[in-house]
Image 1 (tube, rainbow, N blue to C red):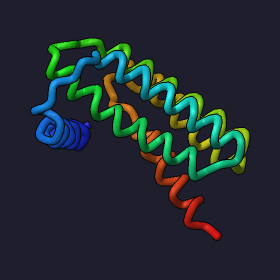
Image 2: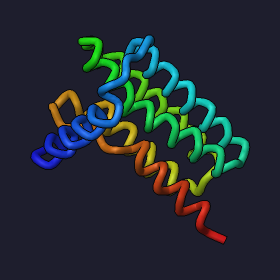
Image 3: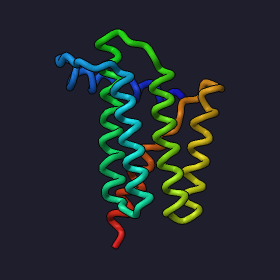
Image 4: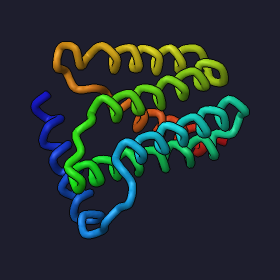
Length: 145
């Protein structure tokens, strides 16, 4: 947990520097919803066999995940439950697609990570970067001949 907080602060500072001067006409909840839809589209792409499109949708969702925090801080919004639900939904649909299309051990590994992300916060343990790990996995799969 000690390493998670400094990394989160660095990410927030970087995101606020990049996007902080802009004014956005949307709420953080709306950005989170769009991010969840992108995860769904990516999961459908993976289910249909396209790792490239799945990675593209996932990368876009991860960018929006940073962006929703910027919007929330700018607008003074505080609805972490919406962000948490959108993140868990995105993970769930991707894990389902990976379970359907990839080797079972890979799907079960990500499924275990998903279960941990649902239950770890109860003990105040930060969640795992599961969608980032999925991105790394998709890059590795794209690099394989």
